[in-house]
Image 1 (spheres, rainbow, N blue to C red):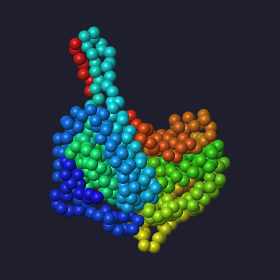
Image 2 (cartoon, protein in one colour):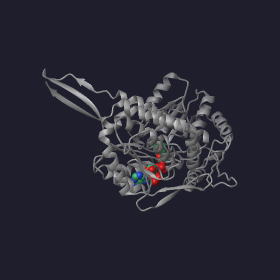
Image 3 (cartoon, rainbow, N blue to C red):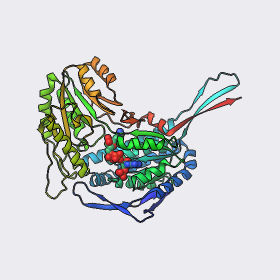
Image 4 (cartoon, rainbow, N blue to C red):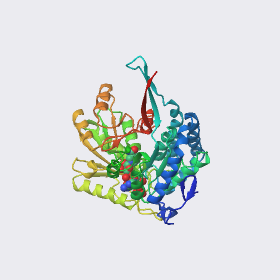
Length: 477
Ligand code: NAP
């Protein structure tokens, strides 16, 4: 595959000739090297995108949609290859990687259709000789910065709608997982997306981000990543009043009420907590379980956790791969140590898993009971395979504990009481609520957070607002 970057339809290295290594987190072995680009290349990518904008926005929505749809189909055609690449650079089990490629392609398919429905409006005017027309137009060059945990889907969730709305893009993937991004760029070129419309560069995050924040021709920044970096970008964006979408960290509560369907709750908890070894922004992290069902839930959850197999993502039956790097394992260890030190009890896992011939980055799926709000695990994203449980007495207390977080991305709850279902869904201060559902993500729904989880929505018709400006024409007859 290509290991240079794509700028203006050309595959190029860094001006300095420098590269950085991409490693397989499971084995620690180097896969390849990619360019270490900086501000100069970032500006050239904007030159290309800005120059490509007039022609791209002038195409019909159907024409743009056709190419966006073809990109999605090319990804599905190459699903196995792209999944193998993702598992190699990110570590997640192969089945999950295949699932992510399908999920990533679904955003392109959705956007390819939705671009045709960017309707304007005619508003009744206040004077007989006037008409008011509302137009929706592409915002212009969109910069896209993405994290390592979903190397393909976090790109297409932005790329599809941006392209469909007529915006050319400049993309910087995470340093840990640049290969999936470059593979998507290669397919974009193959399906005939014109030179300059999709540009992908790898390298120095600060220099690249800084160049884009400083460039007036960049009209939109869509960022998915940590709240910490989101804050930095928001400060930088103030100079040019750059439009932002910030998809930031999460710390999802998972409430189980006494009247919940226990089988469904345990199955959802297991899938939702341990997908991608717990390294997802909408992972359930804080399990808040009502007194009457607490012990049964913990017992069943521990059994399910003990059935999960840890290993290299390519291994048969593996459901927990490595963590992305050494710092990630150390963070998990520090959260578990802190929880034990503050009175928590380990009911499953609780330590690294060492596997012959592989890197020391595997952590056993872990269950801790007796979580309290004083523990780090209650306050910070653990971003690892650790579930912590606490108990609550009544609905008010459960909702209060669930909302006791600076984050507001996803929340889950299980109940069979229809009145409670609506009450609790309304009371949870989160952008996404899984009510008897542990897997809410889908291309047609508006994904996004509140509070320190950011703002802006990706998915569904709402995402199109992120890449379009509204203009009105007051038309004197
Ligand atoms: P991160 O450290 O914030 O990095 C995200 C991206 O920002 C990477 O491409 C990174 O580049 C880049 N970056 C870092 N510093 C930058 C700067 N000063 N200027 C411009 N770009 C900069 O996050 P991560 O560790 O990759 O991802 C995990 C985080 O993402 C978690 O907090 C998770 O909850 C969040 N997340 C949120 C969502 C959502 O939809 N809300 C989805 C997935 C993940 P380098 O890799 O080169 O440093």
